[in-house]
Image 1 (cartoon, rainbow, N blue to C red):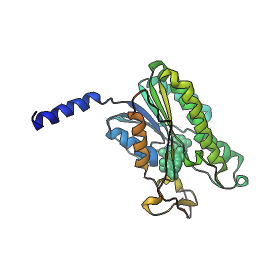
Image 2: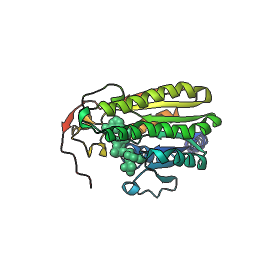
Image 3: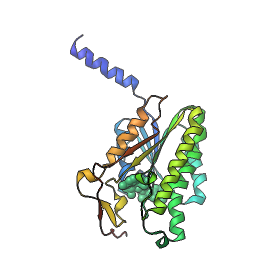
Image 4: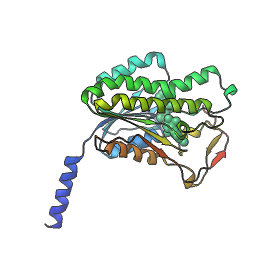
Length: 257
Ligand SMILES: NC(=O)c1ccc[n+]([C@@H]2O[C@H](COP(=O)([O-])OP(=O)(O)OC[C@H]3O[C@@H](n4cnc5c(N)ncnc54)[C@H](OP(=O)(O)O)[C@@H]3O)[C@@H](O)[C@H]2O)c1
């Protein structure tokens, strides 16, 4: 077989094997979610991105569609998500990534801050899964991928509510995995350690400065690809990712406008 014939055969084989999916990603405008969107688009998928502010990610990519949704505005959320789910029954995978950090001793956090963090980091994801699950179960396949955290694995001081939100998300995902398996819907959790993103802009700590002190957002995106590419009968239950050397540095939080 000539070399040219071999390359052409390889090309057509990979074209035939590649299945472009429609994938919804929350927290698509920044950090990890943005890297996930970029990777999925580069792989040829259709991406529906959810965030409040896409000025940070001005995307005119023909396979990207932006949805401006405040996931912490719970009263209107079920109806809004239902409308998106009904308008996009082709969604085959969801990456539940939107979230933020809130740290401090428990007495320093107001009841409103506590409620709003749980609303965003946990309840909004439960409502999103609830809106899309009937269509995914009917289709008989699909992927729900939750971005947890190392904070979902172990509680740490000053992180009581953040850890609680991520433990809740992880427990929810574990239960959902059992609930959905019979319908062909796979549920995975990715637990990253400290990643170099704007997550730390409003916080008084950040990962150390050396490349071995933080994950790149693209590392987490790579794990998402791995999960999506697994053969349908295989589930990556959880993937834990850590920087090689865990170093936390104190810093002055950036003042937000
Ligand atoms: N960075 C880390 O070290 C780290 C480690 C472990 C886990 N994580 C988790 O990874 C996820 C992504 O964090 P990141 O590091 O990429 O932080 P980031 O750069 O600050 O991104 C957070 C994303 O969430 C979106 N978001 C925040 N509030 C929202 C709301 N009310 N409604 C809709 N979208 C909202 C933001 O979009 P808008 O502001 O445009 O709405 C943004 O796209 C979070 O769940 C975080 O807990 C991060």
